[in-house]
Length: 395
Image (cartoon, rainbow, N blue to C red):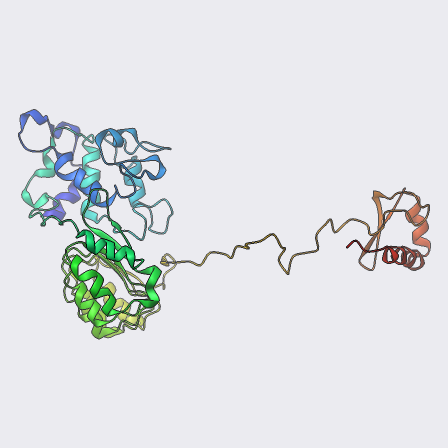
């Protein structure tokens, strides 16, 4: 029912005429009840009061109306012409796609909800009753328990250990935690000591290149709000991954270059909210991938398709000093002559008149002198080279 109703909204079932004035109802507006929570959860971490990528802020109606540096955020009544909707629909690999590929993505129902609101005129007051047609249309029919603030001592312990921690969005108590800076020193014991007090706050957790195993996965199973887990380049195996169980919230799982095999397929298929899994570099056959892709609501990135997105790319090297590359050509103009005085007349050379002999450029003062050179090139060139080599070298 929920999917069918929102599909109708995405096709344009909502119109401006469906908006009822706020004064006609004591219920919260559609913007307050549905749109603002969606933007706060998915967008305001980069487009809020404290940060405005592209000049765009989405934390208040006034900021949304103002739009970004290059375009309005939406075109009232026309979802397809709206920048918000356009960027959501771009391929994940596109640099303009929003949210960024390493962040949780809006699901089809959330995108349909946003599109339906814009088609109805993007009202900040009043209700688009079609979006509230039944309780099943609400984004959270049974709102989850709010995330409590993290203990200050636990946050301080993370920072003292050089572990990155920040809220996932402005005003949220949910946390993004990344062990990248100390990955090679991170094991199950360290993760448990630092994160056990934060079971109720962890939403995104990155443990790439660390030495974690089954005990950490068992701990992650207890993180009630966990949505994204990065375990690339770890020694995680099938038994360890199974410790996750059927986690109720996990949306994205990065397992690239880990030790999982086909034995982990049942574990992955049992995760009810899983939307995207990265398994490139894992021991999974074509048939294994086909089995995973049999779940139509799961995007499987195995690096085997042209549009596969690598989670990381090594940038080209940058030199840190002014010395030329060993493979660079000698400095200076390669067409410049080796001599400064004409070998025929002794006058200063003119760059317009040259001859090349055995890879060396010899200059002359006028158009007549090259003809003299051509009568006996070897003898004339030897004279020039001898004179050049006889000059004292500049220290």
